[in-house]
Length: 256
Image (cartoon, rainbow, N blue to C red; front, top):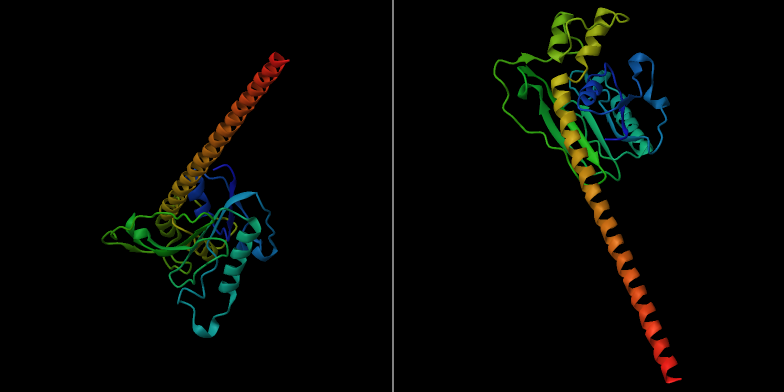
């Protein structure tokens, strides 16, 4: 995992933190809520190994009235795709709600997975993870039974106390966002990927990356070994040719 991972639509940064806990170096392109518009972001090739992020989901969640829906969420998915192609990364991971369309990108295979926070702790939160990579690989997340007596998930418009939302998302009691209003704090926390879920996702990607790197290493060793054999054989043939030339020369001198 040498290259950094680029985070887009970072929000509170909970998914970033999960990937950092699994050993990734994460660089953020920011978020609209903190003044960074993805449409103004320009990436570079060969700087990142992967792109992670959860684009806005309002139009896919089913909570927004049809009369108020726009194409903003779809446009942001297109921006996600642009950044992936612009960065020319090995893989990408997109997180969103159940109603999100497929995020397929040319040159990458596509995998769509369901993950539920209720598999790991007593909180119901279903999400769609979409993973793509260039080499045809995939990530593995084990499906489990939902734990009984689950609490409801944290929401951006949640009416519960802020400390309770922090607990649901895996944040510490002393976590705060002093520059935001209480409503803004709840929105930021409620929109985030719960740390428990994020760590499971990041761990699955880590296993994929390590396996992929190992396979690439084996392929490199094979190529290297084959090259050494070729060079060695070439050297032997050269020595045989030189000896034959010398023998022919000696035989010619004897005849004279």
